[in-house]
Amino acid sequence: MTNPIHLPLHVRKQVLRLPVPHALRTALPASDRAEAALASVLKGGPIPHVDVTHLAQQLTSASGHAVLGAPAHWTDAQLRWAYVVLLRQLGRLNGRYGKLFDVVDRGLDHKNSNAPISKTKAATGMHTDSSDARYNPDLVSLLCLQPGASGGQSLLAHAEGLLERLRKQRPDLEPVAREAFPRDVVTPGLAQNTSAIAANAIPVFADDAHGMVFRYMRYWTERAMAKLGREVPSELAELFDFIDADMADNALRFSLKRGDMLIANNRTVVHGREAFENLPGAAPRCLVRAWVDGFLDSRAKSLPLRA
Ligand SMILES: [Fe+2]
Image (cartoon, rainbow, N blue to C red; front, top):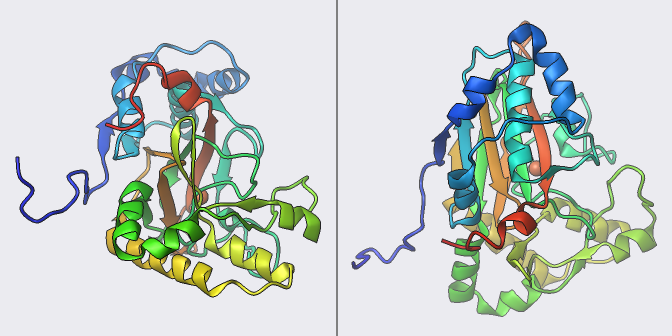
């Protein structure tokens, strides 16, 4: 079959939505038992089996993401329980910031402190999660409990298409994208001196045994360079400008509603959030983030890395 407008066949203009697996609905604890059930599954207690074959295929395919919509009338504890049970089918929850991390505006400003943007109401810019060179979660997920009063739309873009366009339009920048540049160290508990920052160097594009790894955090790279007293090389600024412009043209933009669970492959999909506002009297925006490790290790044998 021909593709008359010469677009890559995997170009997707809408976020991929999947139904919540039926097994989650049938195993859902009653609302008065949900807190205890949540505590149990967070501690590693037994979980019901849920078939996530289709979801896992989407996460390893060119889409690299999915949004599952759980019923909005489930309580917060029921939604969190369903979220943890679902994610545990895919791998292990990482506890670096707590297995579940509530992304809410805490009145902080990431521009004059080491606060992560996840504790502010600012636009995040497009990024992949984890600024630590030694740690990169396989999956990043967000459960929407409260979407907030205004703004806060979610953005997703796929690095595979970006790399194709970079190679066509600015092949001179690919070697820059494969060179490691430092990122600021913001992880609590890690040394944050200049030698630690200089050592925390990560390339934008790399490959490992599982395929492509895309790690993009413009803001933290530029801040690392400033802390080290180094200019951002002009070719690196050009690469960042190319990536940002490409994502502005190609990103999916969508709203999450209560009960939505967004899961993205953090190695191939970059995400962002627009600025938002909470209004007095309205429930504050609250998304529950989780990082999943071991997804690729547990899936690589049975699933192709790309569709
Ligand atoms: Fe993020």
